[in-house]
Image 1 (cartoon, rainbow, N blue to C red):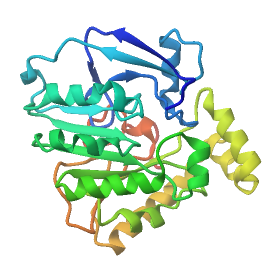
Image 2 (spheres, helix red, strand yellow; image 1 turned 90 degrees about the horizontal axis):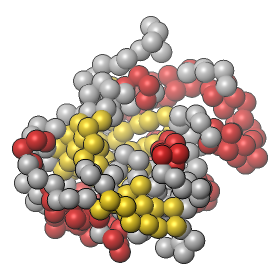
Image 3 (spheres, helix red, strand yellow; image 1 turned 180 degrees about the vertical axis):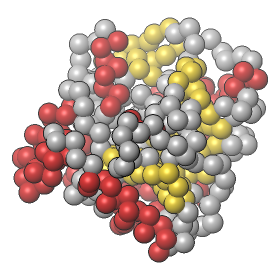
Image 4 (cartoon, rainbow, N blue to C red; image 1 turned 30 degrees about the horizontal axis):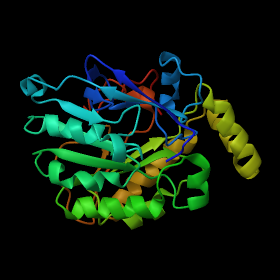
Length: 304
């Protein structure tokens, strides 16, 4: 745990927030901030609401809330843990906010989704097994440990893969979230081969550059992958979608070659046949945001 991280306790009225992510439902973030400090993190915009002067990744607010009551309120809903933080940050080992949350949600008639980059989630297998519908998702967008460490301070790729396998073997639905896909760097074919026997779903999401981190990522590519810089300019300055349109076709062919279902912007609940995970196209967040996992997109223009 980084000793330079500023940590404080805060009181919140409610930890459950009605929201409109692609699959709809409630978002739950047991912490404010995220010490993984991903350089491409879309959630870094949250800093301006916190009062912190530290850089994103260098502060963490530990939420305190009143016990969750009336679980019937969430009947039939999706509950997503970790939309602008990771419930299993290293600090969770000490504060146990996510474990407390799970204890309070046991018995809820809802689909629970936990998004993480950590292996600490295996600590809570005893609780996860008490939910009728629960899914754990790991974000893995590279098999290059050097690139991974350049981008974030999460656990190693090997530890993520090991945790995914352990949770999958425990009978819990798992997702390999190949996100964000870095053009010319992320090799989803290689990742697919490694995870296909230990996950039920593979989600694909493109790198979306905006806000303060756009310049940092572009500078990183220019310095470390100069051969790819023209491609990044084409995608992120000229708004050309053709690279990801071709990638969608490749993903669909990969699914066909491996007898895997390929779906667009929808994730029906269920377990996949081992070795044949469902591949889900979530490219272009602006097209799927608020679509409630219906398989429909909010396109501003025809064609992609």
